[in-house]
Image (cartoon, rainbow, N blue to C red; front, top):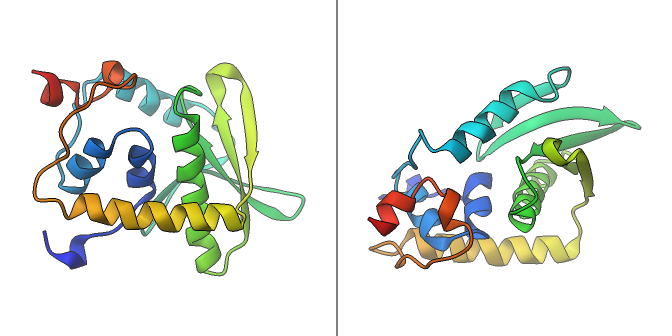
Length: 168
């Protein structure tokens, strides 16, 4: 993989806080099982919830789920099927807010969990910048490994689209 091909994306940030092996696999274009029921449910939610709002905006390194405006501010919404990976979802959304901030666009974030009917406001702050810079450096380190990190059994393995690759 050429270094020009290496980019940290919001998806890699999300994977980073779940499983570092997934970061390597995704960065090396090893795609998860597209027939995985968990991936199907996530895709269904993205297509059928919040239908009245502007959805799925793609920018370099980002795929923003929902955009709206509240009180004159841009709100970036990240839709997740459950609160199980809440920290990962928060960091992915903070990554988007940080990237927008670097481009001169001020926005706030909102995590949305439609099945639980819950929304959580997310705001970029100095501690978030520091955490994201550390995560970006470590994601690059993982991407440049010659082999993926060894699989580790964690609580997310059961619904993972890479489970067959790791455990068969």
